[in-house]
Amino acid sequence: MAETSQLLDAARSGDRQALDELFARHARRILAFLRVHMSPTLMRRIPPEDVLQETLLEAARKLGGFEPRGSGSLYRWLVAIARFKASEAARRRVEDALLVVDPLHDATGAATAAERADRAEHLRAALATLPEAQAAAVRLRYLEGASTRETAERLGRSDAAVKMLLARGFAALAERLGGRI
Image (tube, rainbow, N blue to C red; front, side, top):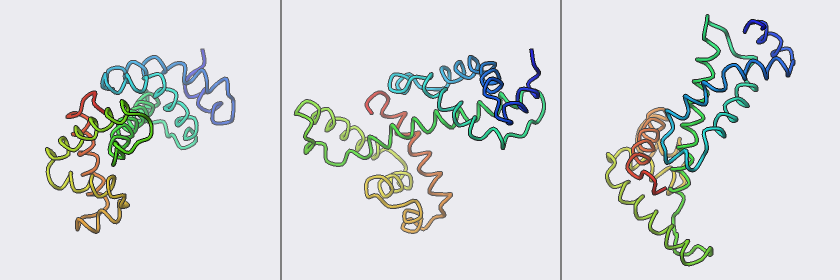
């Protein structure tokens, strides 16, 4: 069995088989990590296997920039990508709910419109429980469509501060809404 460093060098040189073997060594552990760290609600909407695939695709694209830092560094790097991909999936789920501005005028049928109206009402109620700065950032960015920079300017904060408010707001909304988004 080849050493990780040998596989890494071969994969970076374009050896697809080496890349597959390198990722196969870590795929089960990464999948286990995702199953533990993704919420049950998120896993019902986006299977951990899908997030694993996104993780490995991203890792394959960025493999040239990976710098080994001792034993286990490749696994830690893959976990960091997996954590980001899971977080991105959860954020997209919340963003999709935030984009439901006028659910009663949806042409998808009465039952679906009623369900979307119910989700929108839960979202509004959850938004009302957020700290004001987080709620304002979420409203400006996703309900009013302002860019991150515009949101920062309107709130008198830095882009980094707005990104943090949005991340915390999304996390709180996902927690408060549970399976309703």
